[in-house]
Length: 143
Image (cartoon, rainbow, N blue to C red; front, top):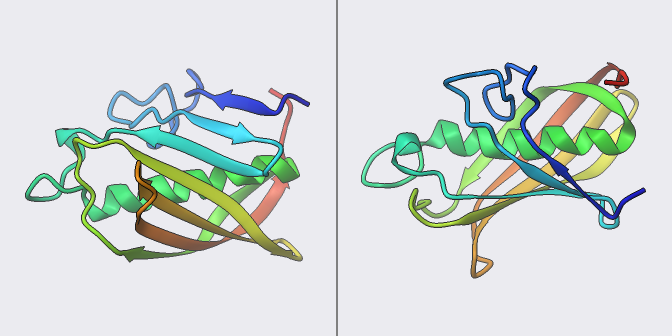
C-alpha cells in the first residue's frame, strides 16, 4: 500500500464537506497517511466560511473536524456515520490563514469507532479539538 494517498473530492459524491458534486459544498481534499494511520488536510477557509470578524464559523469548524474523523474509517474499510460529536473551540480561526486538520482513531468497541481530531495553525498551535463516536453501518463497497 502507498504510504500516502490523496483523497480528492469524488465527482459523484454530494457530501457538503468532501463531495465534488455539490455546488455549495466545500470540496475538501485530504491526505491519507497509511504509515501513521491519520487523515490530514490543509486549508485556507476564505471569507465565505466566516462567522463574524473574519473568524471561522463554528459550524464550519465542526464540519472540518467531522470530515477528518469520518475519513479515518477508511483504515477499517467500513462505512460509518457520526453518532456523537463534541467540539472544543480553543482559539478563533482566521479564515485567511492556512490551517491543518488531523483526524485519528483512538479506539474501537463493537460497532463504535472513537476518533479525535485537531485543527492547528501552521505553527502547531491547537485552535480547535473534536471527539466523536462513529457507528459502523456496513463494509466499504468497492468503487
